[in-house]
Every structure is written in structure tokens, then in C-alpha cells.
View 1 (cartoon, rainbow, N blue to C red):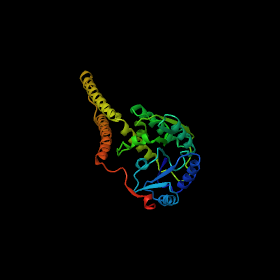
View 2: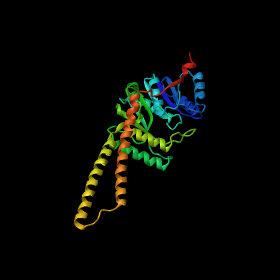
View 3: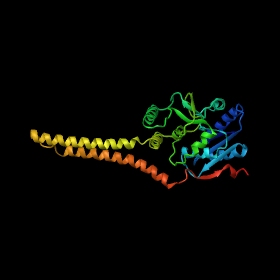
View 4: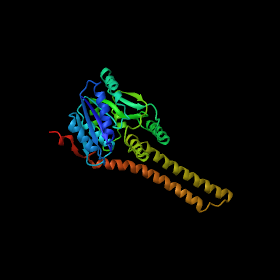
Length: 310
């Protein structure tokens, strides 16, 4: 069986297009399919569309959250619900080409590969600012973290049951799937494809959301920011001592009086800024620890297809 996990947030227009495209691919693959749609607190008619599909097709399942918990929670819920020996994660907007699935399945079944991932060959069609910061994020995270993350990699991948079970053993609340897929190891190969536009609807990923998501990735997989805060604090102290010695020596040797309030205010603002930077970095890590210690569920289910199927 192949489990197809599809997170959905306000995707009423894209779901029928996705399902039609996947049904065409299904005829080329000699596997039983299991669709698992996760309704991540959509405010449009997404749930109604999923109910109709589940009533019509026995291989369609869905999980509807009580509110929006985010894509990471949706992926986790889908992986937990999956039953297939092979599991794939796909976006419903058809930016992840369904026609790659037969090739991905063949690679997993004919080699010793545990996972076939996908990556965009380019970022054509994406805003230049977003592309620039995305590339810089991957350069930064790969420099400061021991967990390698492939530039342009998508969540779209095909995994063996063994790898999925390994990912599910990571029960942390603060999840960054791209890093988790890499952290568990297992042999992975990537297939490149040309960037595609959405088939329908609009993306919910704003620049600010992507920025926060990247910060989560850095905090979850690297403690280098804490080291940077310590280094900047130490450097600031040393620089302050050198500056004081310079001012005292200058006053003793040349009779040059110490500068007035402008220099004092500048120094105070600099030291204050360094302190706030360090506190902010430490606070981010403490906040993550605080969320983990609460031990709240990653998501809450309101409804599944079992409501419709006995």
C-alpha cells in the first residue's frame, strides 16, 4: 500500500484537481492507494469537499483539526495515521508533480534507498527577495548545524515504513520536518524538477511566516546563536575596557578631557543593544523549552472519515 499524505488549508479549489491528477497516476502504479487528507482548520469549504470524496471513494481518508495547528502538525498527523509500506507527502496545489511518483517508487523498490526526495532545480517565478533569503537560509543552517538540509528541497518525498516509524519516534512539539527527515538518517536521493505555479488558490505562506519558520529551523537544529550571544557579550566587554583605558591614558598624557554625554549615550545604547540581543536569543530557546515542558498535544482532531464510514 502507498499512503499519500496531503495537508490542506483553505484548498477547496485545488483538492479536486489534485485528486484527478493522482487518479491518473494511480493507474500507472501497481499499488493500493490510501489518501490521507488533513484539514488544518480551513475556513472555506475544504472539509465539505473532503467529506464528498470520502463518501464516494473508499480509499480516501481525512483528518480534520479543531483549529489551525500548522503544516508541521498536519504532516505529523498524516504520518501517524498512515498504514502503507510506502508513504509519500505531497502538497495539494500540484506544485509537487504527481508524475514523478512512479519513478520514485521504482527507485525505492529496486535499490537500497530508503527515501526519494524532490528539490526544485530553480526558483523561477518566485519573488527575488524570497529566493535570496531562502538561499541564504540554507547556506546558514548548513554552516551552523550538523544536520544537512538540501537547498530547494521540498516536503514532497517517498519514504519506507522503517523511515516513517523513525520520524514518528521524534515526538517533539516544535517540529521542523525538513530537518527531522534529514536527522533520522537513512539513505536518500533527490530528484530535481522545474518550479511550478499553484494549480489553484493562493498560498498562505507569507514572507513573515517563512521567516519565522526559518528561525524555528535554526533554533531546533543549532545552538550556535547562543554561542554568538556569548561571543558578542564578551567582545563588548573587552571593547569597553579598551575604550576606558584609551580615555584615561589620553586624559593623563594630553590633558584631553573625557567627551560629554553624546559619547556616553552612544556607549549605553550599544551595551544595551548587545544585552537585549543576547536576552532575545536566550529567550527564544527558553520559549521552545517552555512549550515542550507543557507536553500539549501537537494537534487535536475534531472529525475523521470514520464519521461517514461504519
